[in-house]
Length: 432
Image 1 (cartoon, rainbow, N blue to C red):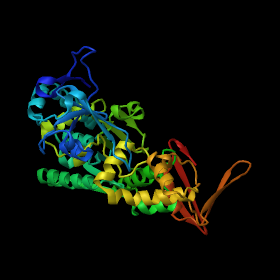
Image 2 (cartoon, one colour; image 1 turned 120 degrees about the vertical axis):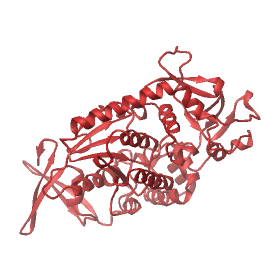
Image 3 (cartoon, helix red, strand yellow; image 1 turned 180 degrees about the vertical axis):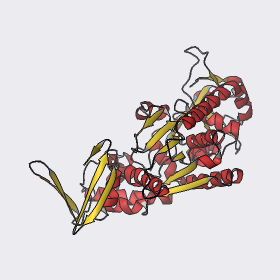
Image 4 (spheres, helix red, strand yellow; image 1 turned 90 degrees about the vertical axis):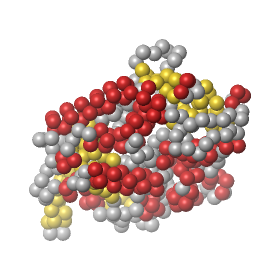
């Protein structure tokens, strides 16, 4: 919401509306010693291993007291980036950033931010509380959902909302740590607060092996491990005759992608026809999020201390080379499990040489998969038969229950009729 400029005197940043074009910078993230150690900055600089941040990062560029001091170039899941130190920054001695002082200097801006967000939560809650069966905070274990949970908890009584964590089974170990710590913290404050986990019954790695890795085109992981488990869990919260309708507060921010930038702050049926989404911090930037966390002393996923600005699945078709490098350095056993599956897929494409396989994976070519090529189907297939007024789909040797998978398409109602299952699917306002 605010523009950002350097505060060189404190090695910090200032959130402000009054700024000229020369002063304005891209909102930076705090950088901690763990990231510096991981990248090998200890070979160039001296710094304490402290909880406080040491400098600021904009993308892969590092700033100290408002000046560019280093840059990380290249790198991928198998190779470390090259560290380039500026001529004036050799043998630098870093001092910890006093985040309390930085938060104090931005006190007025943070006050405006949090109060606007709390007003939004209160307004949304009052409008929809009598229309929905449940008010939900979607919690991911990341920084944005921590902010949203804190804001909601300051406005809505703990008996009037629930928290749901969607466990894709591909989460980072530090994300599970954060979820458990946060759960204990809030349930200590509010003993009656309900904190749930929605999860698919099968581990994701099983389906990676069966169906091949997901891709930017075939994002089956999103529907199977996020959308469907959440929808199934919500329906389970109602009785059989109940019609689920929910208000979900979540931490989606415009800054994260062009797609998210287009989201309305309040929207209906974007993810599920029974769901109203409320984006509490939609227009916050990354600097504002971190300053809020520090000012409120909120638990922070330790993955951010290693250089991530977003926390997601361990291996993701939308993950950058930077993300993959950090995750592989932090949790090599975890990433190796998925890399083995990707390697088997690449071999089925006819690529056998180890170096070429590693290059294929490092360059993210597997993320572009658009069909079934490279997948050992073992006789599993689906055929489409066009008729005059219909399209028949014939599934051969299905591995999963179709009635479960079709729930990702829309609301399904069906019944057994002799040797057939007869039903209908509601997608939006249409029934098929």
